[in-house]
Image (cartoon, rainbow, N blue to C red; front, side, top):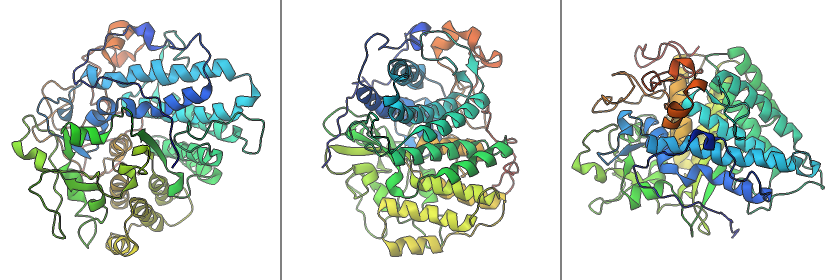
Length: 512
């Protein structure tokens, strides 16, 4: 079994941690003087999403995608409150960690043609992380950031267009046949073990994701880039999926910690409801691979119905811990890993997501292929990855509604199945919900908090900027959001749909 060499920063995950860094430290590389072998740096960059997973992802995107619900009454984020000691870490860790490290590698090796392939791989990854950052906040410091100087904020539109160009260039730069190139050792490239063809397909798939995200705000650009990405070559099988392995012998902050060791979360009832209401056969066969009950008084049999916990309690009921939770004892490799040194995997991009993106492009008339066939292919890809047997998968798929034509009904069905297949990738599914307003999710059961900057009866749309930006860099921020009172979390991002709350029969009127 291949041993992954992973160097984990140990982070004290106490729930309330104050952010005390000065702004100038935000863009100051920690390795500005010492030259470091790029394999070590690349390895660290690939780990970043899991080194502080609870505060950066689980307490925010995971809840807002309604994959998970909180079981702790003191958690403020499910009712849309901002906690700087939680999500504020993502900003600091990106600018002072991954981005600073990447910029340092460009300084050290950018003029050496031997490192062209290696830097292109790093470029693809940092572009993916840039997408995660701007989809969290909106406009952010981009051009010139991460080199120790204060820079202005750039619009999300500018950032998206540049990321597409950067991904295109990086993919085209990689030369798989050049034997003079520096090669990352397999066990340092945690995602694709040095397979350059998979890095290229991942880069093209990221380009497709960005293109489809802008479908409602720049359809012409979205179509052009989506078609170009598909033509260049996106992921072709589950073997191409991007997943971050976690080291069994070290510290790793992922869902097993939150659901079992700390009992902070249970599966959202929104998610379990959708596992039973999509196909005419009833239960989604992936449910038993993904879910179980932790409490001893539950026994799983053929008649078990998985039930989660409703989202957004102020005072969580005593029976919340009896809700369904993650199944760590099953055979699903996406949770339990390969049985060796890698104990768990965090999904970054599933192959099934790429198929659903292609299906949506076909639904809009942008790409060749039948949208319904591609949408069902995406479901099948997810079934295959999870490990569902062929008969159960076929029965479930045969009971799904058919989609046809560029209509809200078809898009809702497609996005809902994409949301199920993307479990538990909360960051991506929260973005899809904000873009399309699908699938059907609920507002906080106890209402939006009076301390939140989200209007009652509406959904959270972004995360506000960290305190240190307001305290030390407000002059660089967007003028409409440079005070705490105006930096609201119900402000739509650039690619978000119009008329968010205008629905009839559960359908939007603004996706086409």
